[in-house]
Amino acid sequence: MKKNNEFIKKLMTLVFPIAFQQFMLALVSASDALMLGELTQDALSAVSLASQIAFVQNLFLAAMTIGLSMFAAQYWGKGEINEVEKIFAYVLKITMAASMAFTFATLCVPDFLMRIFTSEIVLIENGAIYLRTVSASYFLTGISQIYLCMLKNSKNALKSSIISSVSVILNVVLNAILIFGLSGIPKMGIAGAALATVIARTMEVLWCVFETVKNNTVKLKWKHFIETDGHLRRNFWKYAFPVLGNEIVWGCGFTMYSVIMGHLGNDAVAANSIANIVKNLVACFCLGLGSGGGIIVGNELGAGNLDTARAYGKKLCIMSVLCGILSGLLLLALSPMILSAVNLNEQAATHLEGMLVMCSYYLVGKSVNGATIAGIFCAGGDSRFGFLCDAVTMWCIMVPLSLIAAFIIKVPVLVVYFIINLDEMIKLPAVLKHYKKYHWIKDLTQKEDM
Image 1: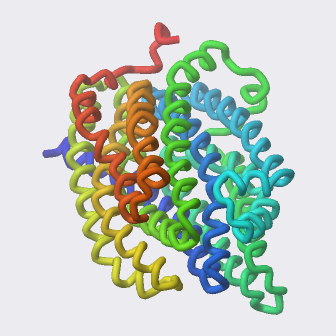
Image 2: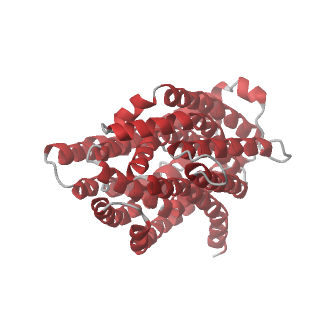
Image 3: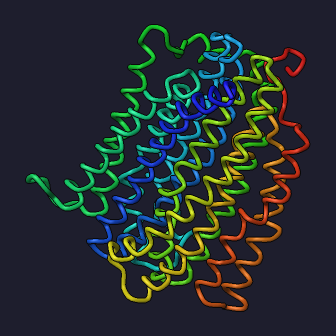
């Protein structure tokens, strides 16, 4: 009982701040949707599609933060702070370089990027305006997300949550001011939403950097930033590369879903945009459970407490099922309120009503897979399974089925959406079977792994 209480206490000190942080981040998308929806449905749809670029960048950042957490959590559990600072500096250097590429692409060729997602001229033009204005935020995000991840892994999850949440609040407030032209500011519409994001990200980066100046924190040391330990670099990519492959495989498949919906008409795009925002808002605790649980399991593995890590993993699996069910029920309960709050035409509203029902069962699979694949498995460096699982599920089953349903058989929009939302459920048998093999019980800090 004492060990169980200790686990719950450790978990909640991580899960609640991380979940709240995820909720606040999702709130930005929700505020964009609500405010831009007050302008026109086309404005909402255009920014939703343009935001797929940020989604693609976030796939890369997710892989880097998971890779960082693998080693940071274990080295922190072992008490080797210098190694934590080494991996922090190396990952930050990678994400800064990659994020700069996103900034240049969205600044220079936004029209080309929008044409990937839709053939609707009005959506392309509006989306290009947004991408060009928001371009600087991609570089800033690449910096802030690594800092925030490092704070979570060094017992500063609450501070990470505070920084991220204040940034979100600033973003939402600036959204209202700049989109609608409040307080004497010129009305900027779509460009205002983009500029609000850039300003909020700037504040977030500055605050994160300030935190590393304090005593008793993990610091960015330039000697580690300039020169990388060869053993650490090889070991990082050994485990992080499959995670990156997993994120790319899953994310590109998920982006294909947006491409498919984007070619089914503006009503489908608008409804899908709202459904995804709602799904992300409700799934925040599930994501926090997986992220926080992974850090706790990693701490125990790094400290050499393999039996404790195994017991914690079992508890996380059970909690993820319950969390997914409760999240699905909450979404269903909120559906009438959501439908009355959004500004959609009759056809789009009909699509959204059906989509919200389908999102409810999706959350169960999402919760379990998030706790296992992205949390427990990666805590012990078992990252290859997720890559193989998503490669088969997304590209051998779900994407082909969705393309056939949408463009060959030409079934109704809601049938296409039903197929799209089966991916997380299809993975569950393989995921649970792999969990019981316990390949994830591994200490990554051992020298022989390098």
